[in-house]
Amino acid sequence: MKLIYLPSLILLFLLPGFAPADAIDNVANLLKQGNSKELAKLFAPSIEISLMDEENIYSQAQATLILDKFFTKNKPKSIKLLHKVNSSANYRFGVFILTTDSGLYRVAFTLKGTDEKMNIIELRIENEKVK
Image 1 (cartoon, one colour):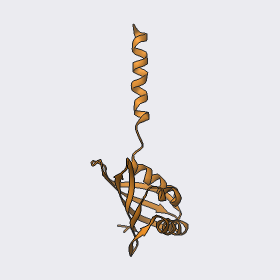
Image 2 (cartoon, one colour):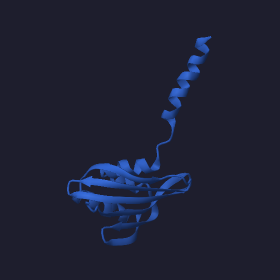
Image 3 (cartoon, rainbow, N blue to C red):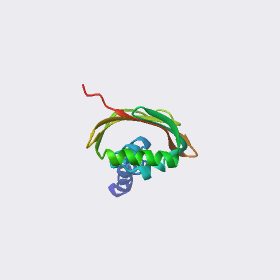
Image 4 (cartoon, helix red, strand yellow):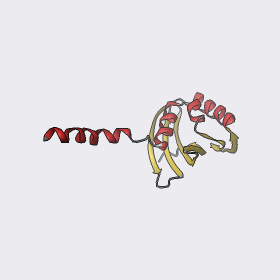
């Protein structure tokens, strides 16, 4: 009789491992790696980027170059979650503190769901004010 329940019990423990990865955590991991090429795959066709005091709307290719330049000057070391909103099926929002070899940065991004995929529509990187 116990053998009948064993497969069900095993399945119960394995199911959480098959849950899809959170889009916000995926972006955070790519930021921590400084991987602008993989991040670019998540960009919407046009993305609003605010980097320090410069803000503009860029194409995927332009945004990749901008991030690549940022990561070249600021090699990421770690990332820490400050705020995460994933209550909407179509929008996600994350705020992180990115520690680099040249300082701390507050990174905020917005994801929008389109065609069964979450795309980054806005990315803000600004100096973190140390208290």
